Length: 401
Ligand code: ACO
Image 1 (cartoon, protein in one colour):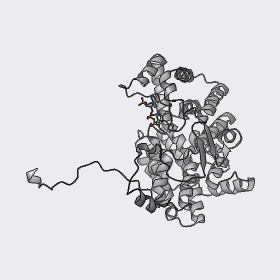
Image 2 (cartoon, protein in one colour; image 1 turned 30 degrees about the horizontal axis):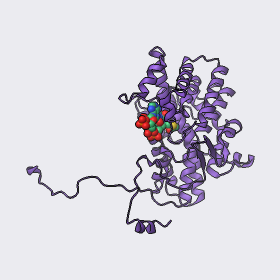
Image 3 (cartoon, helix red, strand yellow; image 1 turned 120 degrees about the vertical axis):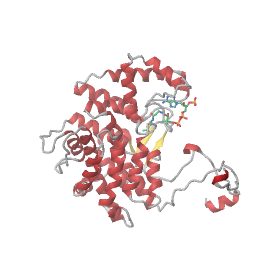
Image 4 (cartoon, protein in one colour; image 1 turned 60 degrees about the vertical axis):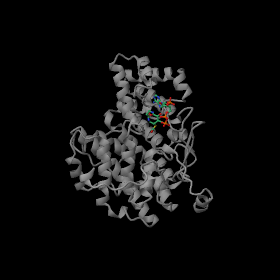
């Protein structure tokens, strides 16, 4: 429909849809999601198959370029990424200036934006080559920032990574190891991390992705758009939920493990408490990612020989919610982040780094959506409003007010 024709035909009527609950912002060929049936596919590939058979880099390639890569394509992609893994030392100095208490998401968002200054070619993007160059740069440097953010927080030496390692192995190395320390990949952790990153890699027009698209629609640079996406992801109603879930489960444990008490709080409309990790804007039967993650949490804890009482509390809450009319009527089920924190914790990742791990996984999705938005030459995102303020008011001089 021609928007001009529509405006004339409706006499300038504006639709209002707070939270965009029923408003499509774009056409997209990246991710298919059916919230009623619990289906999620990237570029047509089922999330269950990707989590089982693919690794994170292959999935990233598929999201960004549309197809699973051939061996040659994947090797070239990885080699291009590796050739950009150096992060300017001045970025490290910016990191050093943050207090240890800074939340890692704030640090990550700032550093991602700061990268623009050291990679000015990532801003004015007018060709596919320039686009590709900006994409491989950020895929290379972002994991370095993630590793640095965690190590700085823990007061450890920063690790610049090793190009001989695989993409995900290198992430593990940069997060958990001292520079040049011996490193042997633990296949259980590698496999679980691949799965978690894949399951978080895209989710169509969620809050952070819409943010990336809308910031990018003004032709701000890729890194600045991603930095805005990281800030959007930070909030507890979005990516920050994984940290909030673990803190909630801890609090329930400390309080004696009485899950019923917390179920009652969640249902009490006078209590702001919500059962974190429950509910989703689009999934109204189950979140297919949660199913896979719940199984992975069981496996990882079992394989690592970790006995975490928090897993039992989580399962207890889920069980109660499944038969509670409040949760059933509102179609509130565990979402992707209900079990992810339990796995991150078993891996030795601090709670306030959980949302950073989410950002690491979501990076290819944000990039794919930004790339699509730019290639489709979408117009600048600029919603309308219905004005409810004063009409006209006389200006009163300061002395007379
Ligand atoms: N605990 C208790 N009640 C809830 C919860 C919850 N976790 N989630 C929704 N509800 C209730 C609401 O109070 C509301 O009840 P009402 O109809 O009686 O007023 C009803 O269910 C609908 O909830 P809305 O907030 O209107 O649903 P919306 O689609 O706007 O929000 C959201 C979805 C933000 C995910 C919400 O369910 C929530 O806050 N969940 C907890 C936070 C969370 O886990 N976020 C992560 C989402 S997944 C992700 O971003 C990766």
